[in-house]
Image (tube, rainbow, N blue to C red; front, side, top):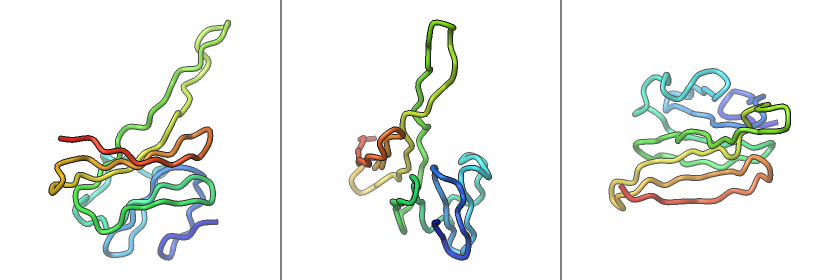
Length: 116
């Protein structure tokens, strides 16, 4: 069981946003693009089972698209399967995007940077 602020997060995997005023919204409730007040975000958390990783007190948070692949078998296309989940932020001093990625199948976490 994972708690963020006053809220229990029942979702098994995905991102969680905590605002400066304490409000918590998670991926199952709203898409990233529809979140209000991106500039008021205090913390973005990536949850995988009972483990969490976060970026705190950053500016310009982002949630890059979830990587997925299509499962193809002899009967045709059966499903789109998530490969990994990500959160990140834009670092203007270093002029790069910092990304934290968790592989869906293994729970292995890694950091990446992409220049912009």
